[in-house]
Image 1 (cartoon, rainbow, N blue to C red):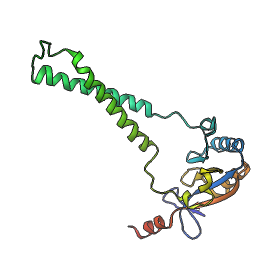
Image 2: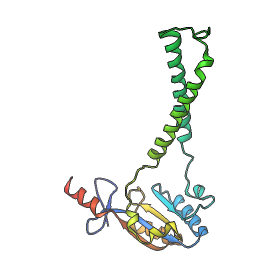
Image 3: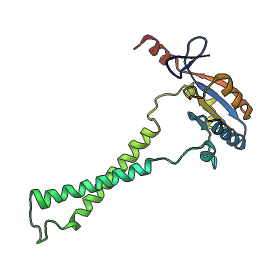
Length: 202
């Protein structure tokens, strides 16, 4: 395996780009300890795959709290504020009109639309932000080409460390996963279609 001089991209001897290295673990406890070892080794581009939730796994992986709630709050409040100002400008500045004897600057009438625009802005931010933070949609993943990986939705526990990680090294990374109790440690290559496209420059 060789690393390209132009960036952190590993290739096999045949010149096929490498996606990463994957390993299986027998029990949730083994997977938990392995995740702690990978975290402590300083890897940042890796993930754990399980068919069921494992309590405390986020902490074992060192996953920080998402910034999405802060983004939702900011955009939601901004949408509500703009909705309020829009109504105030239209009703009290641009086209003053007394309705049912009420003052055009009466803020109580602005509440429904202000609320709806705030909720709408927050909802769209939550959906689009979640997709962006999770790098979705991902139409395909090299891991799906591994038959053993497909059993992660049934009875397999796995860790995959990506080759794009700055600390990735074929021998050292493989040794770490094996030392953490991993079995069936295997190299994951990129899709042939992607390799062909990158090679032709199209």
